[in-house]
Length: 248
Image 1: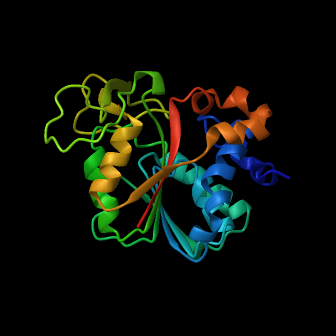
Image 2: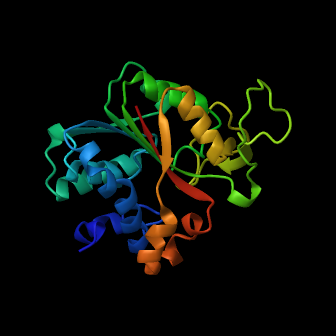
Image 3: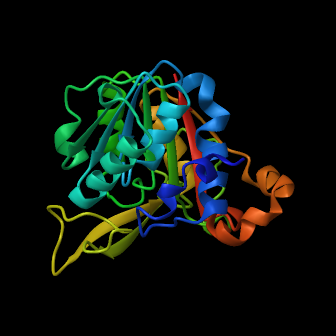
């Protein structure tokens, strides 16, 4: 049985993509394929939402999970679900607030950043904070610029790369009152804030700067073996969302 089919309350605790094929496909890519790197570890779940990935990390053997989430109703849903599935309260902690304020001074082995990296303009600052936690393994699952729009990465020692710079971030404006979008921050004006969708090269460039190697999950091969998931995962299939594994 697929993972979330066993814990189907997660299909009803959020408005954000609660589709069985999507959640189970992402679980295989994000959690199941990295279970050996999660087991026994202290895990941070950034923008933990309804606790779906915090829960999955614990089921994969994580020693403890800390979730940071700004929306109280989602934290409440997470706590209710954890209670229903009898997760010992000593194994998790949900903190309400802004990750940029709460992350200072905390220590983790593994960091999950699943669906937040394209809801901020502070990508480098976030990776700096993550690296300072001591995390040796980081998973970033994010919208990215489509491959057809990305510049080719060529060897260059030039410090500026004014032309054909592949390390691009597309600027967008998002509403802050939508559970699926960004949270209100200092940049918010008239109910909207600024966010940025990075290129794949930009994610790898920033990861390398902070001392991480970077690779991506093989989504084309995944869909070749599980074509039934494509309809609810068009963003991955069409190449404007990707999953990055950062390691030290």
